Image 1 (cartoon, rainbow, N blue to C red):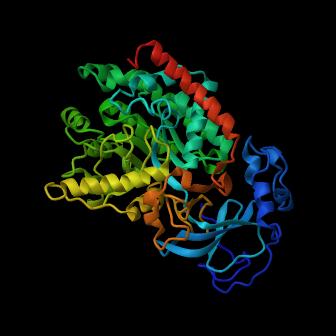
Image 2 (cartoon, rainbow, N blue to C red):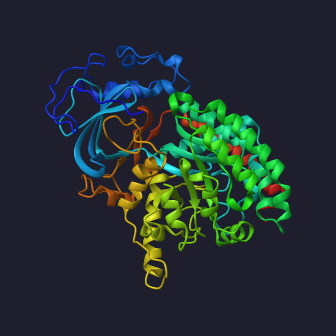
Length: 531
């Protein structure tokens, strides 16, 4: 729920209540220097924070492992530039102070806000935390760098399931850390199995991540014989196993729904329409209605999927989803390369569906998707991660550049209208479009009452900027990447500070995640996969 705005933040020039009188907050710490704030924010994971203590918050030892680094619960971010939300629109403003208190944005001001510790983000472009509409968090790094020459991702992903729970958690942790380092604070997460979804939740709980998790069904261990079947009997024979998987995932979802102060909201996650039957589709719909958090699916991934569903059930995948009420709640569909643009956009638009466009799907250089066509059709388009790359800033850039190239190559000859994408399109998709698709007004925007999910990107430094704040920082994101991300927080909990992952010991996370990948690669080598 949105937190009601009040006038106790102590400053003038607020976008909500101009002219409020300046005073120290009664429940916030006194103003302190930047050095003391950084020291508190980067304290050892379970060491007591003087800022927390002075603010009357819980001792960090009572928080989950790794969350004692968070420092004060009330502070001000002094941003050189910020993407703020006013009157239903995004705008870029300079010299913005953002007051964060108890996990919410309490005020956004062009005048200084006094009486709180400060984060110096004067060289940064502060934006809402990015919402990625499609992730497979446990499975990115096992395929990265080994599939780009045309090898299939199938076998590496199957081998992820052979890991122990501890090994799987190590693999998940490294990938989730990368997602945070890349600026993604909310993950629409389709784990490739129930075990991987459980692993994601364990990591998300530890680091205060906002996620909409679900285990893909059929899971990766059963998927490929059904998906790449020789005839449809394999699909029909799979129904009992699929229904059992749906029920197991639903039982787990019930146990975590609304957990971690509402940060974990599980969805139903069917693999795709061509691996389902009416019985299984009805089971997902019933589960989604019970949980209330929506459905996340691969939709019309290819023309093959679209033609299969038309042949079996007499309509496109998008229309077939509508037959089961999939659009009654949030709906995120990934890829859509086989979408029927003569039929599907009005169906998806009427249902408030979000198209999760994943420019790095299939690995770097894996091909383009109909992003310009979807924009021209007025669709709600988000930028998703998929697998292989967890760098959200890089994927924003790829979406725009690939989309512009696609527009240049085919716009004049395509029977389908195309719109040339811009970084404005991408950033809106990453923030308010995705948040609205989740039916939420408290994320995806910098505005009083919204959750303090925030990302600071350095747009002044080498290779990205010029040494000065740029006049149009969104365009500088076309030169940026995850290493440009300097500040990341979820619910006001700092996870990345000064470009460093501070939610946990990153050296350990990287080492253990690397060891898990080495296990998978060694098994691939023993099978002759690399040959």
